[in-house]
Image (cartoon, rainbow, N blue to C red; front, side, top):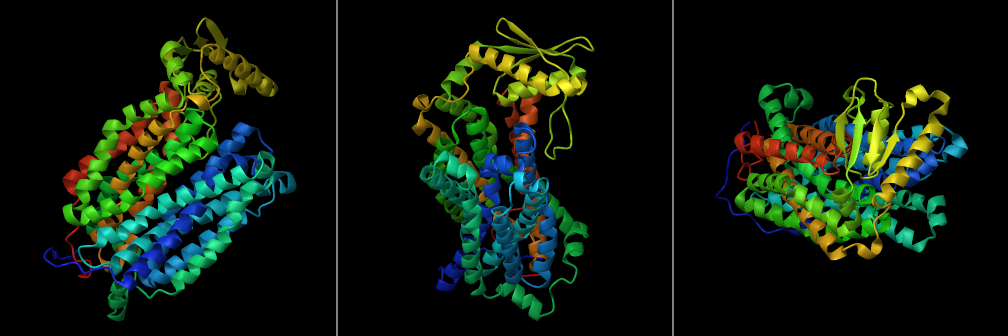
Length: 555
């Protein structure tokens, strides 16, 4: 890879055409992220409408499966559309990805309910999610590459940082639209039809995005090498079939995007999940807190992108990973104290013990919903983890039915597989007994709105978002600079989407599985901490600094 350093060149000022390129690329990508995150933000409503033929818990899991499906296929979208981008051009490829995303999102808003068309409803929903994931897999690499190839030397971090704001702004936009609808409609209206509106309005966003992007010209770097006949005829083979390029992609993943991804999803998506599912804060208040934190923190994407043009990409990205790894435990503990102090008190004063045969206790990682966890130990631990109850594990002799000790009460679990036709009744009885016991022990059903310390909660969430901006703001520029023009779209897209689609996208089920196994609501944070630590070490030792590379010099 021959990319020369031109550190002494003086960066020019941003022109009107530069602003047009950044605006067009960013607006389209914002709308794509808006579309993508609606399914996660409205998971409960989607579950009730498309999965109503199964029990609520299974329906919610199926909805998360649909959400996860969008993450799982993102690397495949990166391969398909990355290859097209290096073959036919950046502009037309991300026009295709944007159109595919917009149409599949609009269709979600039109899918009839399970009551109307039965099993076809969840099938159509998951199909739309797969198409969204494929589209997003091609969109980001195209937008980031397109902007970077228009940017003057010495300002690529600043220019591409505007693209880096799009995922957060898209999430912010989806939360605001949902919040406005929730406040403007009754709960019954929102549940009946209001939740469909955010999906349907995406068709107007699609029209605006396509119109804006049609005004753009092809990237000058790609146009030059295509005119000279130097563009790759087999970009995937060249990018990943040659070790000198595949090695760069591997280092970009392990020493860059993997750590960036877990910090991103922990600071934004998991923070919202933690507020609503672990701390039992109502969805509206949680969305407001996250939206305020995003509004405050988002400008730092541009700040750190600009700073990376001066001090380098590596120092900022690796500092973000290091800070996250060192401070996640105290930050999330402080968030519990600010949002649900009654839960914190119960965790300290009301210890719970699970006595079970260790061989019956599974690691409940189930992102695809293909595994079943039916043993008495798994039933007990899933209940406690879902209800944010810490517990200690005590080994019992082989064959022992698991029991849960809460204060002076001992509740016997059961094996769902062995219960047969009585499984539903046994589940209801166990849930009622266990719920009564944890409530008596002081574990609250929900956070008390009057006791939520909103300023402190927002401050903690802003810190988490700032970590996100540190790792994410400079990453696009670094990825673009690692690969030559002829394979840049393919080369950067795959490590980015494996990192964000798999390491990041499967973070919530991984954290839940760790929490259920260990019995501590914070223990799942070891996953993002471990991945961030890996990225810090590999990035520090093996990933080169790229800010002074000339991306127009190509083999």
